[in-house]
Each structure stands twice: as structure tokens, then as C-alpha cells.
Amino acid sequence: MCSSDLVGGPPSDARRLFDGKSLDQWQGGEKWEIRDGHAIARETGITTKDSFGDCQLHLEWASPDKVEGDGQGRGNSGVYLMGRYEVQILDSFKNTTYFDGQAGSLYKQTPPMVNACRKPGEWQSYDILFTAPRMDPQGKVTTPAFVTVLHNGVVVQNHFELKGGTFYERPPAYDNPHPATGPIHIQFHGNPVKFRNIWIREMKPAPVTK
Ligand code: MG
Image (cartoon, rainbow, N blue to C red; front, side, top):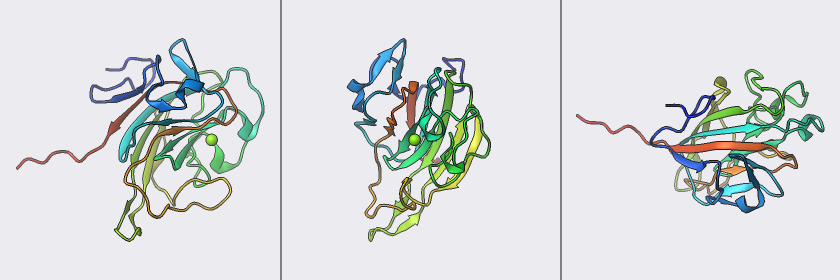
């Protein structure tokens, strides 16, 4: 079933967002360098042209093997659900930063339960289960968003209830109105973080037969 040495070869019903060859499904993808089956962050963040709600998202990333900077300046990127909710990507291997800014944190809301980071330059996986928030017609949140994250197969977030968008300069808050779906965004934070094998499955309730 798995096509790589990491957890998470694409299952048969997954939609591949990056197969190692093309970032055509991403706005800004033309700015990134594609080499040897992976993409390297350059110049700008990239954003899927399509939108998603409840989903399972898999991606693999590697922080630069040449270690430069420290804290939030080392191997920083991030993957955003619905363009709003950031699962932090950072080289957190022997790199101290604020607790809710580490790799696997939900940025500025909660740290990872454990630090599962591999060494700089080594491939790592994120498997993210995301439940989009629901709102009533007036825009009031009826069910918040929830996120589960496995980092290299280790649960680092377990059905965490998001308090809203993940901002660096202000407390989390939900947008009002809030769309039902949104794009996946990968951050460019000045560091040449690598990515490969990105796929998504839209989650729908199982059909019930009686
Ligand atoms: Mg980030």
C-alpha cells in the first residue's frame, strides 16, 4: 500500500496535490523549485486552486540540511487548513522556541504533545485530520474546527478544538462569515524547506445501508 519508506503512501481514493513533478494545482507553484521529486519553497507561499473542508491531508517535508538561524528562523514553514489554521512546520531538532511555535504545534494555540522532529535534512511526515467549523446562518460558530496531527506517525495533536484562525500578532478568532471550504496553503517563511508526496482525501460520512 505504501509507496515510500514513510507512513502514508497515497491510498487509491486520494487526490494527489504534488506528485514530485508538478505544482500545477497550486497558485504560486511556478515560483518554487522542483528537483529530484521534491519541491523547494522559494519567494512565496503556495495555495491550492481548489478548496476543501473536512479532510485527511498527508505531506512530507524536510528542513534544510544546512542549519542556519535559530528559533522561528530555522526551517520555518507551515501548512494551513482552509487557508486559516496553521500546523507549524519548523526545524525543532535541538532548536528552542516558544512552546506553541514548535513543529507540530497549532500555531499560537497549543504545542505538540511531544517533539517528534527528525534531524535537519531528513524526510518527515505529517498526517492531518481536519474537521471544518460549522456556523449557523447568522455566522455564529455551532461546532468549532478540530485537528488531529501525526508527526512521523506519532500523535502530537489529538482532536484539538481550534479557537479560531492562527495569527501571530493577535488572539485566535473565527472569521465571520466563514466559508464552508477553503484552500490548503503552504507557507514560505524565508527558509528553503522541501516538500514531497502531498495528497488529500475529502472526508464524508460513511454511507449507511439498512
Ligand atoms: Mg510557520
